[in-house]
Image (cartoon, rainbow, N blue to C red; front, side, top):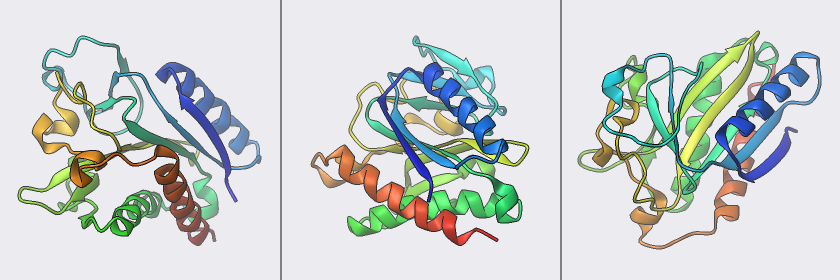
Length: 212
């Protein structure tokens, strides 16, 4: 079983420092973990980001080592950072990403929302979870980094409607209108703790199946 650290609403850099501490612990053979949290509004720029991704964002911006482009983090999201030893899982990065996708898809299915993972296999910019609509809407982003086969960074699931979300950036290379959230889709507000626990349960199950 993974150790769960629920940090609540926490400054992005404080959570980042905590992730790095957990990465070093896992490298030394200690227990793997899921870090569950949300952040005050912030934009992070992954390795593929360019200046064109910023369209007037006026808040904090951090360049980080995860893959992908610009993404927004805010209090309306559930953010989960799995710190997982992929050496125990055949160095299976694709499988690791799929577990995160499938966990979020399963939670949405329980709420009778049809969704899928990357609809454009071979195009990493589409990594995440997409709600079946015309055109498809993106409800969750995934961006990871790996240090000596230990993972950090992770997923951001859009839970509550946040008027400031994704304004002033090109989120993951898409327009702001591409993004959606669970509250908007269901036209009601769900308890964060219930969705967090459902995501944790599916992630625990998925990662256990990847063990060698």
